Image (cartoon, rainbow, N blue to C red; front, side, top):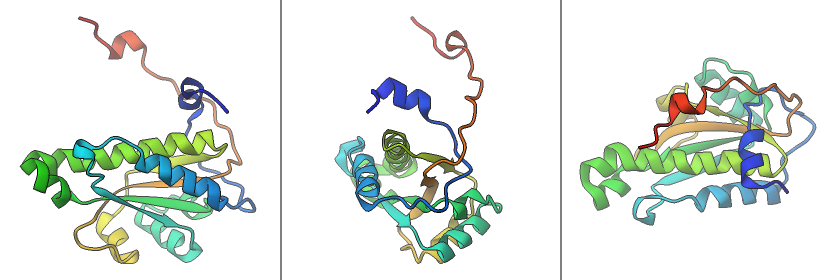
Length: 173
């Protein structure tokens, strides 16, 4: 098992998966449990996670995301949806417009790191048709799809991408 720092640095977007290696239930459960352990404003967890294993549904999700093939090739696609009203009830407009989305993406980020810790890979997808995703998966009207996370056992290990220098990003005062 890697420590957190190594896990973070091992995370890369994976776009090729071993089709013959399904994600084990216990690993998928650990990944979503880790997502649900993420912090959220007021501990409200204003999100729902839909784990899509069905091939036909993953194929349909692929079409909503500019035909990005890895979405249907990965054995699982997690769909992170936010419930803006849950945060709005507690925190007003800022809860609706910001906290609900932040909390949903924090949960997705925790899941992304849990995938790496479980020995797999993932790719975060933000470019997709949310309304069509909602229709395909019959997601309730009060739930808004925010992010897709394809995951499975990687069939590639891409080179790390260049990052900005830390002193270009961080200011110490």
